[in-house]
Length: 79
Image (cartoon, rainbow, N blue to C red; front, side):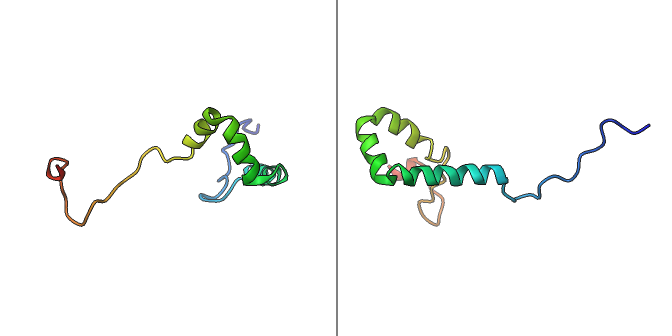
């Protein structure tokens, strides 16, 4: 009798893009351009600043690494 739950295949290769995600992103780009692009977004943002900043804040990286110079310093050294 065959195993009803065979082991899964190797799946999508690491680093390859999901075709459905790529298609959805392309559709959003086309809709964005069709609705007026950046100029229309700017007009909407002027009327909906709170919503705009909520969306924009999601584009900012959660963690940022900053290099001040080539040698190590503590925060106390910078005062």
